[in-house]
Amino acid sequence: MFSSNPFSLLTAFLPPFAMQAYVVLMVLAVVLGTLFDTYHKGSAEYFAQRRAQARAAAQRPLGGLEVAALAARTLAEAAVSGEFHKWPRRVSHLLMMYGFLLYALSTVVMVFGYAAAAHTPVLLPALWHLGALMVLAGGAWFFFFLRVNVAYDGDSPFHLGRADLFVGSLLASVAFALLWSFVQTAFGHSTASLVCFGLYLGFTTLLFVSVPWSKFAHMFYKPVVAFQRRVEAADGSTDLPAPVDDRR
Image (cartoon, rainbow, N blue to C red):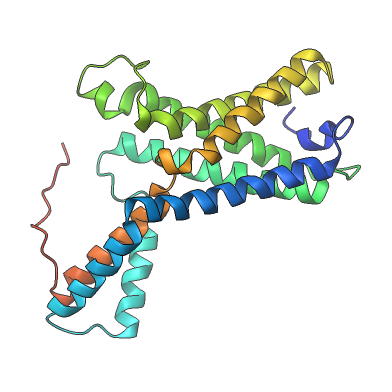
């Protein structure tokens, strides 16, 4: 299972072009969904107004090197989920973030580079399965134990709301991806394999087409907001109170 390219086995009844077209459509869905979300919520206009106000209120100009350093610090913080001071939330998000990167990138390489090949380097399916397992572990930890309404409000872990659309569809996507890979490897192109593949595609499609209604786009907004806040703090234009240390 961990050494088999599930997309290569899939070509027995589905041409490679079909999955390649599907991946392209999902990428377009994310791009268009993010743009729509930005337009619908007025995020782009808000950020532009915020930058203009910050420039007008700046007490000192920032040089190019200083701005680049602030951008590097923002990226470094995002790379370690530094916005989360409590280690369980940080570890959970790191597992999901890096697991999803492994899962998505290895999917693209296997679908476009090795779906029709006779042999796939063992590392690629290993990374694909590892990434899916990391997402499943980090996401389940967050979903069942770390969500605010569950950890602090006493709600049932199975209480679902719109805010859970992203993590819920992501968990279902990777869970059925792993199940499909196992069933396909163990039993070939059986009815069970086709059902698992259909559910995998269904939840994956939901994950990517629901960008305007889920928290998917927040992954792009949060670094922009964090960078803007660093710039405002550095040039003296910030209107935010001093942060409170909540490390408890």
